[in-house]
Length: 246
Image (cartoon, rainbow, N blue to C red):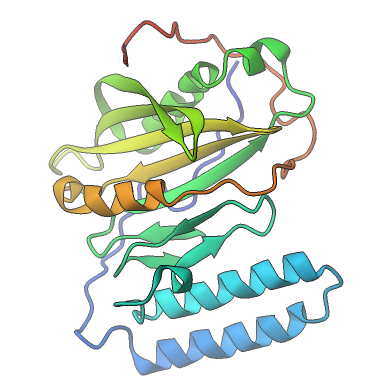
C-alpha cells in the first residue's frame, strides 16, 4: 500500500509564461501589491513573531519575484524561507515564485513537499530514502507518461544524505521527451521531497538554474509540519544496489 497520492501543486501543468519586455501588466502588479498589503496587515495581528516574520517575507518575495522585478536582485532579496520548518532556498534570477512554486521563464516548475515521520512505520523509516521510491513513481505516473526505468543516484543536500530519482517523461504524446527529478532527504522527524519538472524542450536551458536552486538549499529548524502518523504503512524498499549510481 502506498501513501495517499497527494499531488504536488501545479504538477504537470505548464502555463503560457510569454510576456512583454516590461513584465506583467501594471494592473496585475498593483493588484498583487494591494493583496500583499492587506494580508500583511492581518499577519501583524498574529502572536507568533517568528511565523509572522517568515510569512510576511514569503509574501513580499512572491510579490517582488512574481511581478517580474527580480532581475539583478541580490540573493537575500530572492530567498524563500518556509515558516513551518525554516528551510530556505534562493530563487534563480528571472524565475518566478508564486503560489508555492518556482517557475522558470520557460515553464519548468520546482516545488517542495514535507512529510512527518512521527508515528510512522519503523521499517519504512529505516529504509529511507529508498522506501519513498514507489510513491515517487506513483506521483510521476499520475501526472505524466513515464518512459523507461528511473535513474537513481546518491547525492547530498545541505550536507545530508539524499537520493535523486529521475524519470524520463512526456507531458503530452506530441511533446518532446522531458524529465522530472525528485530529491529525497530526511532531516530530523521530516522527510523533504524536492521536485523539479522540466517543461518540454527546456531541460538543457533550465538545468543550470535548477542546480543553483538546489545548491542554495538550507535546512532550518527540524520540527513536524504534518499530523502525527502521516506515514504509517511501509512500502517495499528499493534495493539500494539496484539502479543506483554511486
